[in-house]
Length: 355
Image (tube, rainbow, N blue to C red; front, side, top):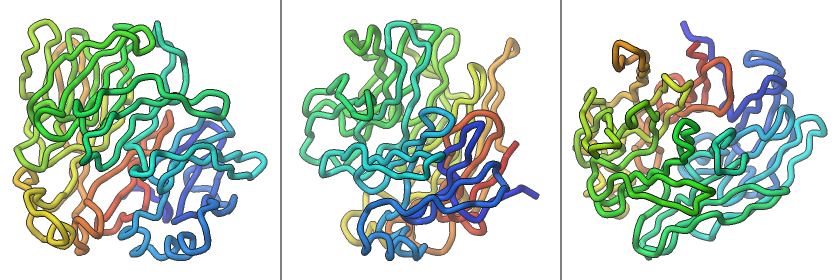
């Protein structure tokens, strides 16, 4: 039996565990410790009240989507269009940054540390419904503010899925989507001043999570339209080799070390269906093999690549569009490993300790 909490774990440091319930933020000194209310995000009475009801929070996306600790006592959280700074010692919450009007949240924040040629700090990539094919930027946090460090030209990508640091190559990899011509893996060097397109132009290169290896990269695909795989990409030849078929699109994952990552699959509707029908359809996408979110572990050692499923949870009865995809998300932090259920039976908005 897995140990779990009744609220979503957003992020954790060696000092604090930060939890969320709608617009409310709570802290504890351990995963199972007593949760103490810090306060409510300053998002207005209507959002606060609606977000306190789980069904409304899911339907309207009125919840903290991701977060990260800047230091042992200060965290950043993303909620419905903005970033808030949380001082766990002083128990204060401050609006720090607003996204572009079309954007609710990035898929995650990324901490760069010890990558030659890049300033240490917290980064995010813009993730929004980019039907106008607008330019898409990468932002870095500086002095409680945020600045653009690179912008993809208009029409080149739809949005940014992931920022993957690679200290061994003095590089940062950027993963993009969504359509064939918008999906790719880019390598940046020297503070984003040099960029190389590693691969692009296929759903096969549409990814959100990756683990750099000695000769290339392990990455998972994120497409509801085709069968998804864990791939190995060889940087020298640009060839991709399927390592393992996975049960659905992969949006969320976590790099544990230079030789290990975890990732989950999502239960999504068929994106060929449009409009209001997409929000309420029960039809799975062609790349979704069942109604479970699957959690996988991947390790690399001298004997090769070892991948296995370690957990799964069933999608609940609410529609996949309006009621959210069924998936497992990864709170940011080091040490013990946790996953948070979204739209799954028994674990929706609850965090499980995996190990």
